[in-house]
Length: 512
Image (tube, rainbow, N blue to C red; front, side, top):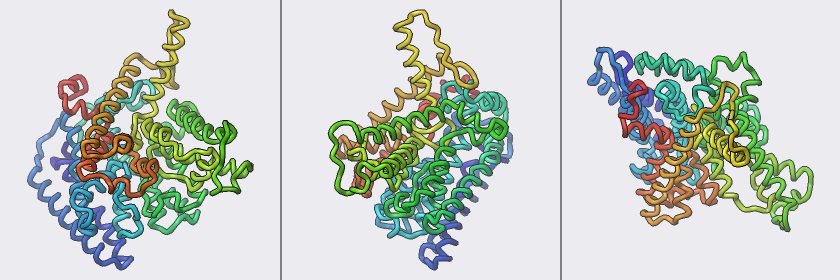
């Protein structure tokens, strides 16, 4: 993929070097001269390398990149660029080693948010800003790749894309005739202003609510919009203990987990587009069921509430606090952000449960919307499988029934359902493979399964949440963390796209 003869990855690498100047300047303002020097040196090195690469690989001849070339560029962004993004992290924290720094960079750029910093506030603040910026840049790259490559090539694996996203499908047929570099720049120009405006609005909302200093506000805003869940605070987002900030984050997570905010028609369609969207309906229904179950379980069975929260026992106020904590945390995991409400402990006390591991991992695996920064299986695939399952059960009673499951833009097709089943099978196969690889490093089976699901769904904080150990990733063997890096990349570029990359013949009918 080239833009005016220059490889797109070389341009992305140059942009990465430019971004390093931001934490360098931030560190200089805070008089952390060591961090400022290392980020400046890294920016110079990366920029110099990108310039040499761009000059050496420059080719002014017109290019018609195939699908495999485009997919390799996406893979290179999430696997190759983190090598350079890890340089300042390694220089400032040599104890992490090259593998640990690469793990941090991959985790951030794939918007996973897993970290080896069990106490982030003891590290350089510039490094925490850099991690948040990498997550933000990775989210922008994900949206751009979906619009410029995966949608036109039919590889977003969104069941019913022709019905649910008709404008995208029509655009895909047109832009497949345009060179991939120009298509990418067009998508970037369309997405970046909205993406940046949403980030700035959230940062201002966090500052206005008194949720930490400027670094915390900016990092959490980037963490919400990119669904990376990165936080510069010990204890994560819950350490803010600010319900106004949580309300702003909740709104931001819902917007980030949906493609609707990037549609041209959204201003004209208004609220109706959100209420009619099957993904938003499923998100609301799933969050309501999970949070409602934690709330209702207070009165089910013989429950003994812990003495840690006596003021919450059998009070209306305590019930609302618990309900808010459960709803915010459930939506956060469903959008694969991984932020936890400060009232989550109250939700657990109210329900009489310890951490509901299976529920949280299930929410993360389900994931957010198609063509968004969220990871996981995606809500529309879950919707297609649900409608198919409902139809099959109904057909057992009425064998001659004709199923007419519809979305606001059309009827679900058999291909939609088949695609959803295929993707789920691939996801389960990847989950089994990742779990097996981690067990080979002598990690316990339960921990291996939890870590693999967290990596594949790009919900890094999930492992810390379900284990209760902030150093959960640090305790893994280096080989296990490298395997998790592969799972993060696989989950970010989507498994079907990776399979298509290994089987170029399958792309023959998609303009490849």
